[in-house]
Image (cartoon, rainbow, N blue to C red):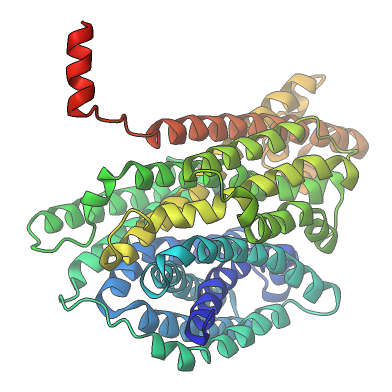
Length: 507
């Protein structure tokens, strides 16, 4: 491996590491941030969903920017922006600036994700791309490991702000790699940038992610959700109409003719909606019902996050004999099996009982992540790889947003049904909704039962809800595996002239 390839591989790995470490970083510190800034639940939700909004809305536009200006320029600008927004977030005096910096950091993360996969397609020999995408997938797992642990450790030893500042300093140091990366070149295309198309597409996807995320904390009929959906439809329809008249459309639908690419889209969407969303949903249960602290939760998740990293990084030689289709189907299947192993979960579970399920899910995610990166670029012309990578990563972000809402709704519906069924009478009806929403303090204030009884009802209702959410996630993983296997099935071999003549003679 020469020096230039080593620099490219470092850049390819650093980008998803930073993007996926930043997303879960504040989660363990949410109660501390709430107390420090004096904000409520809605602002805390925006702190998490704001990053996903910036990331998801800008993935395709950043992919187009990569195709226009080259992956190196976009990578350098995105890494510098990531460091800047992270530093501003670390010193933010209030919730408004903190949420704004999270949206900006998500947008910078979109540039990192799109440019890193394009570097694989344009700056590395074809024979080395599978290994580079394995490192790209492993870096996602590494980011998922470091993010929650950094947030939990910072809180354990003082304050939440150093965790944000530390990640910004790492990003600033990584941006210095751009000095060596410039030698790679890659100036991109010469066509002009479609500013209107970029704005309408980013606005439409952003409004859609905002509406889906808001539905998880309110309901589909709330004004914010309805206005978000209306804005999303209007902007996306406007984008589609504008693209029909464009000589060079931003999204080239020709890539959808490649079954390998579409199969990768379906697999990424299914993995995000099932395994990745379930890990977000099960976290609060482990903290509130099982009783894990912020740091302990990060440690309990290590079998999942650690194996997602190790399997992607070290498993490449072992799975090289498997086809791309087999890796994606096996990844979804193992994730489903891991969630099935978590089905008996209850309030008395400890780490050893979680270990088999978490390990299987992590192995499945680690097997699938590099394959998803390879599917996004392998069958696409290099000059359109930025757009193709942006579409593929956007599908995963939409899957995350939608999966969390679907699984959260399933959990709440099952928890509400169980709370009502286990209640001796109707006097606790007002508390049932709070129990289903996971608000134990609110249920205690409204319920007429003794405190211990409310806690017991809360635990049984939330346990039933998590089990139903697990069943829904397993069904989505299985459906994704079946859909991926069908879409990526080998094309039937065309008979040669001699074979055709022989068949005619046999008939």
